[in-house]
Image (cartoon, rainbow, N blue to C red):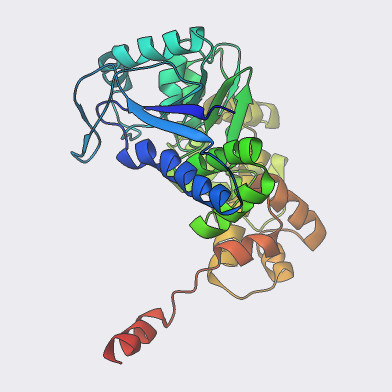
Length: 338
């Protein structure tokens, strides 16, 4: 079989690590496959650009070659922030969106990493398709491109030959999927073990930190949110909440929904999960105790809600995200002194 031709599209401001990450992992997979008796490499990788010179984010120069026919085109993400002038950024990358569109038209499978999804959308590839991106920018993608069905909790989404991934390390989730398809599950599993990459992730939900998301809502809903945050462990009482703000229950639901895009109960549940995540990460309290702290007498009900929001049961979440900072410094100092 001929090697799979994988090109990475480098462009000004892209993350250099996302340019080289997938080719590096595919190189590791090639070595693993060779050790298992493979006769020839499964992949032929290249870094391409419609430009002669590319300076990536952080000032790193990237050596590029001319765009060529490929089986897979990888589009990395770019340096971004909630305040980024996205219109100007995408306008400056029209040569790239033109290249993406042309490659897709020729039958090349196109893959974006993180906010590279915005480039795919600008090229028209995501119209009417399901897609994902970093949870931090998923709402922005959905608002900018109303014809894209954004699945913000997914790590990797493929829809009719177009693939999008979540942030940064999700490129490895995609790369391992590629290795699994072309070299088999054994090679993919061995590559993941050697690279210390988690090959069992299925969602980005456990990593979402709602405190980093842009605040939604104006004066009225912001006040309701503060009230709910301060009473996160209390029983949900919509009539009581409405009385506290001098409105009817119907007005409460309408005004809060119009401003915040959700119901007060949905926000309260998210606040409870946010509080529970903090306690699971930073304390040794039992799940039942934490459930009671955030307003649930039945730990089973709490666990089901927590899993629905994060994709993991509380004990599994704690096993992955428990902070073990205490005492690390002295132990490292002792090692250094030895």
